[in-house]
Length: 148
Image (tube, rainbow, N blue to C red; front, side):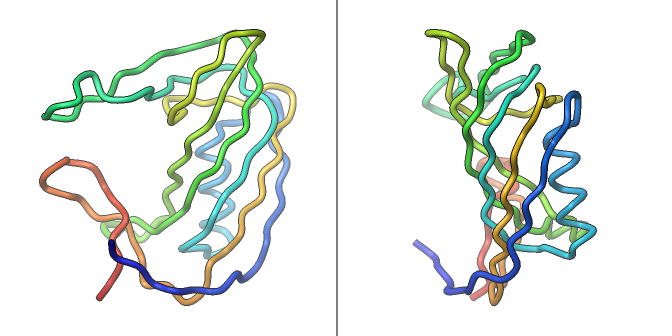
């Protein structure tokens, strides 16, 4: 396991509004504030999203299995922001538990994740890291990479 040690820098608190695109808004704040490494916590509601709920098959090649919803659900999630090594932009990676009534899904909400009513976001900047998301040839994903 690779690792580096950083320190908590600024803490940014944001509120998302009905219809906001979760990834677009969080990445926009990170870009505006020049946040290149951070931990993210979100709580609130999602109107709709396309969620990766694991791979279609546990043996390669890795292909995401998606489920979708468009019926307003609760969400509690955690994620990270690291800069993309190709264009230096901050990229959010988020996993969450998303539920309505007795129906709960856990996974990576992507594909147009839209806020329902309100979303509270806490971004905790991590200073002192040399980290980015770089293309991993084996998985074809942009994965966290720590400089040596």
